[in-house]
Image (cartoon, rainbow, N blue to C red; front, side, top):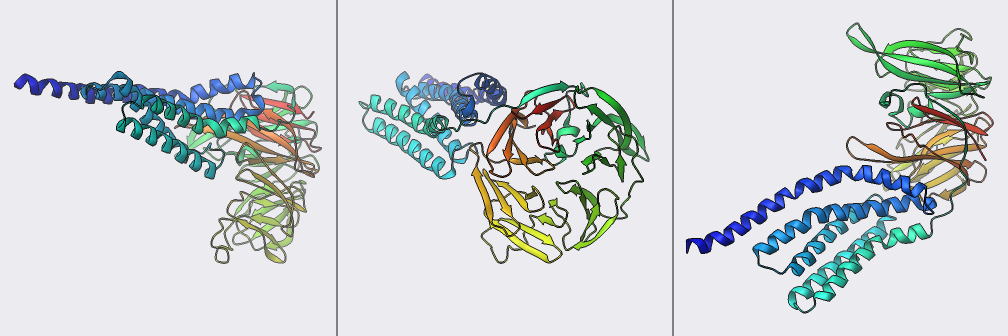
Length: 495
């Protein structure tokens, strides 16, 4: 009698132990998924599926996750089935069913889904097929083949929208041609230099016949019990990419200097003060130290900067560094032109409680609502009269009255503004995907658009991925640009 009780108890103890043990290889596999995705992206870049990289990557990710769930669920189902004295066929069928059900749950919330409505519909359909197949098999043991067919159909339903997106993916614009590439700092850890998509537009600029860049090169001795960093400012020859001039600055840790290109080809270095520099890094005039607020925005034409003199914004002449008469009723603008600033603050939420995105133009006449909706993004000036708005895959060009002049949709998802040429002819947006904790970039590329038609004209794919976000800067005429990081900075020309 004692042995009759011990045997089934032993089987269940072994089954429970195996279920717990199987968690560890599944977790290890989950940690490796970003590496597998990067490997898959490398293979996609060299395959005919190259134009359909984004949906192909999403399909690959969903498949990897189902495989990871199966790595945990299948052995657990086999162990539990052994305790229940079930057949091997039943253990595999129900193990695959549970793994796919969990995969369908992930698919419901997946950010890579082609569309939220589509994700929900396909997830529900897949889950319904699995439940029906398992239920029929449970009621009628003779319906085993039907259960296997339901499992196969459920998996096909899960991946169908990705296959459809791959088949209908638009042709990519031509690749930009690289002219040269240079390493400014061999240190592969570049978090301080590439950690912010906003800062990535402030670390490299075109100035005359030079490209000027600034980056963190390491820590410096403490001063007054505060951590310090060494920042290097370099001036590169546009033709060869060689460093012609260099100088080092010491400042507070985390207070990265910023660079701005003026309309007359000079450099403004923002490092506790605004310091005008020539392209060879020599001084070009007296500096300007704001007595309050901050100066962090320049108009696309390089003539004007926005000085946030709380609770207002004062426009500053970029050539003379003298305040202009305009005093605008805005404290935290997102972009500046020579006459106005933009903000995405939710001043208008009371009038439009169901909207989450607002674009407000602030000029001498006050605040003017240009756009409101569920998703809009950070507004940017393309020139004095046109505004770029990116968000949720939509790329819109508006005029100063809020009229949408051009609108296009990207098949790659949400885009981040990367820069605009001084003549306003072209702008660039960045597409990137990160995974894991800490986040690991899977891919990053820039798409250059024609500002008149909002159509893509070129693309550049970053091969040496940065810690987070690559630098980007247009030449004044919009015909070439630099992109990358201190580890690998490259000059490209448009086709």
